[in-house]
Amino acid sequence: MAQAIPDKLYFRIGEVADLTEVPAYVLRYWESEFKLLRPKKNEAGQRLYRKKDVELVLRIKTLLYGERLTLEGARKRLLAESRGEVEPLDTGRREAAYGEALKRMRGRLETIRSLLRRDRHGRGP
Image 1 (cartoon, rainbow, N blue to C red):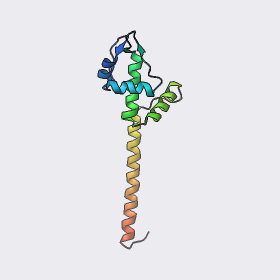
Image 2: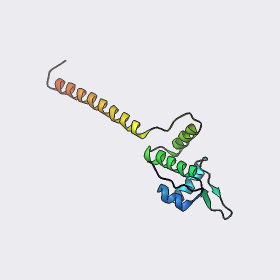
Image 3: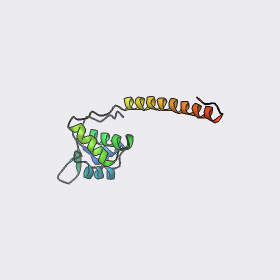
Image 4: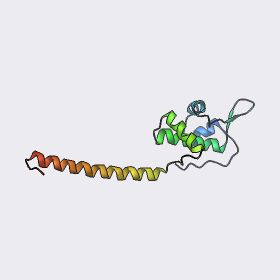
């Protein structure tokens, strides 16, 4: 999900909502759930997101909606990534690995099916 983020110093919550396609109320909720997401506030109390905050919102969105992690799972992953313990998983590699695993599983199931058919027809191994 390569999102083009304009080269600006600060973004208001509405701009972030438009850029990330995450509603403003969800962004405010995520601020309470993820300690890493702490946009500055101006004198009027309006949130001012920096580019790194917008990138973090996109990462959280990927973890929650793309990888289907729970809030706790996403928090743990972000913490590990911020400490350098885990690199973000490349989605393309993950999907390829899943595809290969599914092919192997299908082959095994077809082998089991053929063995069961042989046994059912009275032919033993």
